Length: 240
Image (cartoon, rainbow, N blue to C red):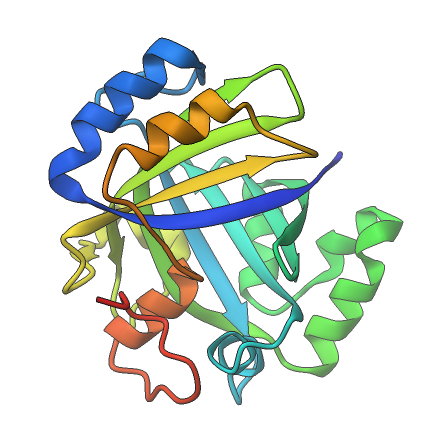
């Protein structure tokens, strides 16, 4: 089954020392995601794919306005179920398509067999593109997420903490045997605000009461740079 989302997305860095207070404030004005089952939220682990010459990574660094990237995402490190996701960016508008996968399908895609994507016609072009451009696993990104929402304009606010990666290790199927490394220099966590149309002023008033800094954040790029990948073009690092 394909799930599709299209909405405006803004990203901010927020100093880690303010995160607990920010979570408390959001819990009072929004509904909490059912997956916020622990204080730190739920764990998201994503395997990102790219071409041998890092086409998607370099498009991000060079500020290409229209681009898309591919990843497999699992929750709480459970490999029996995951999602293959296409994330498309058009300026501030984000389109995300997700396709449910079982373990065998995850294993096939990681090995370079993209045929599981053909089970839905909307993904056929992705399977073909990944095949002829030789997409392969590049990095694993992991973090904890607390999510809040309103049943209005598809409004969703998330706080992602403890952003980590696995260095040059990308053996996703053995992820539970590997130890993540916290991405250096952060001392900040990531706030994302997503909505269609408009968002109530009171939410933005609460957010702006904290010292947040808007930035073109890419967890994928941060992970690649942290793993000592040579960077060029726009810096994906914290701009302060």
